[in-house]
Amino acid sequence: MITRLIIFSAILLFIDLLAFQAFRLLVGSSGKTIRIITYAIYWAIPVITILFLIGVTTGWSDQLPKSVRVTLRAMIFIFYFAKLLIAVIILVDDLRRGLFALLNLSNKEWHLSTDRSKWMAYSAIILGSIPVVSLLYGMARNPYRYQVMKSNLKIKGLDPSLSGLKIVQISDIHSGSFLLKEPVERSIKLINELQPDMVVFTGDLVNSLASEMEPFVEMFSQIKAPMGVYSILGNHDYGDYHHWPNPEDKVKNFEYLKEIHRSMGWDLLLNEHRQIPFGNSRVNLIGVENYSANLRFHKYGDLQKATEGLDQDGLTVLLSHDPSHWQHQVLKEFKHIHLTLSGHTH
Image (cartoon, rainbow, N blue to C red):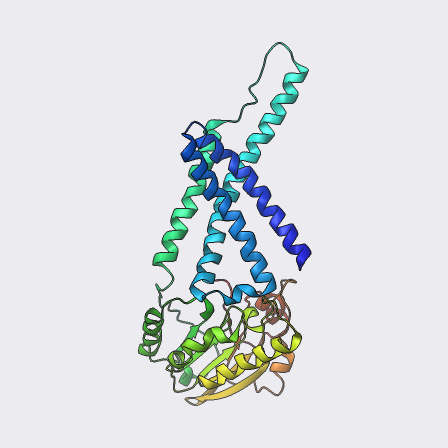
């Protein structure tokens, strides 16, 4: 963990050093006070970033107010995304300067300028400012702009009584990122106004800690549907991205998260299925734990176990958090599944 932190910090500092060349050229002719303020603000970002990364690694950042943690994470991502764009252009300019220096050594009759290109530096800063402005706007405006996306599915061979079945899917709540309650309450009202027959949640209730959901349990308990509310787990729900003092604390957190699902009236499917009557037929609802084709994610899902004893008559729907599961396994080995609902790619 410490080694990875050191390597990651070194990469960030390399990006900082490259991007700094553009800022130094931009304010190099300004007054001393402006230069000092600009440089101080610029280098404060990597200092705060590294301190925050240390806090995340050691766990002490959990003592910070939630709003501070969420804002810091977002700001660090935004600024380093911008700096990376700037650094790439500066690196290209450095390669140009190096090439020109070599050409100057081999030819004494003419001289190519090896000075840093001002227009490239200015272009880099303009390019880097675009994501800063747009992402900061997104932070302020977009987190709670919930939209209803409707899809009408036609599946051949099903009992006609299944026609009109309405399933509402919600996913990737990441409750640890919520700073306001009122917009979330509006989203739940929006879900209930759709009058779904069934509601399914496809994973990532929290960022890491089950306690992140505590302020919202009563709120999400209000989601109702005649056929029930069903849920599965996503990659963030296992606590794999948190530094735990001991394995027991991680297990307790996971058990608490499962209890939260139950306390909200959600039927959490852990590699299992439910057969739910509808009309003259039924919905075979399968829920697997997180399963990804990407090797950096743990494969907790067991679709074979989840489908044991499943009568295939009716509509068969799979809930699997990571959509890569569909092509990696479902399409090849479980062709009787009519529909897979996933999240993860928000």
